[in-house]
Length: 261
Image 1: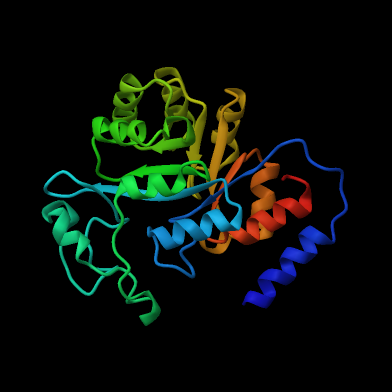
Image 2 (image 1 turned 135 degrees about the vertical axis):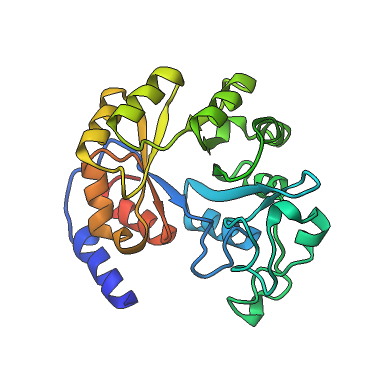
């Protein structure tokens, strides 16, 4: 599989001769570089930095005692050998968990990071795509402010939540999901948007056209079967200015070969 992937990368990238492109395509490492490192961990985020990505994406949740920790799922079942909901656990309970054992014994001792730890790692090195799973607007803004990351993040979440975030800190880049043309038009009227998120379901020509007409950045997920050079280029050709990927190093390499970096 890897050989086929890189063969396609070479065929579409290095074998292509073209004039250097004028735009920089943003690379977003989904949950950090999580194919070789436990997702949403400092190791995965450091690997994303090392890959040359522009952002790493992380998922923030709040423990029962109000601490901000990183976990994609609402529970710990998939990532640990235990069961339970993050929202019902104290920070000390969550911190005791090992989140790398299912990936291999070499990851023994890997702990759930705090939001602050991830922001501190990122500071001065990379941007952060904040997927706000369960976190108050006030807590999000406070954490980004104390870690001097207000200008270095995009904040993903629902419209009501993002309105609260912007009211607290207008400098933050709110990034809602596009959903469909009508919803996106409403979002553009309600929020001072500079970037909009797209996934496989809403990355269609009609919704893309609304975003392009508003001159906002388009950050699209290219995950699973769509996470390859052919689909990356298709996204760029259709207006994407940023791509979220599980293959950050390979995407960076491809973009360099095509003159986008």
